[in-house]
Image (cartoon, rainbow, N blue to C red):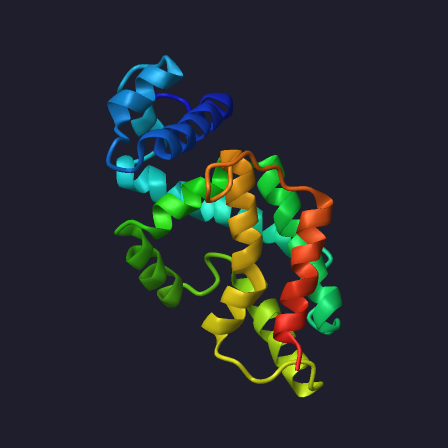
Length: 203
């Protein structure tokens, strides 16, 4: 059995994400990955059982990294505006520093892997982003109890709180808006949108 090389493994993970973003999950193969990494076709199997194992491990690893970053400084007991501002700041910085990961996770969410992860995370609740989910649910509950927002289904809260930010980040990464015109996300646009989101959520 060949020794594991952490540097080579990192290259494999990086190139896998690049290929999935560029060619989609259907276009991702171990042969294509090996060629992009300039390694033999057998080398990825030193680190992963197969393509599915590689994708699953990538999602878990990158998801947990993302959790640590977006959870940084987030206090579930903070006010709606304070807590949401921390979340937006962390998510914004994460997306700007890791431009491939947002489209990578979109590929996963729009694939058959999505249900696989839902099942996996329900069976092993501590495996993926558990601290963030618990903190966010506590945060929402606290804002409801303080009378800052009305009790709202989680899906509606999530859509109002984060969909506008995700859309702006997508436009920024694509370099164009929905009309195909050039777009760059500025602090002014970011925080102007944030103010509208807070207004929509508050009683």
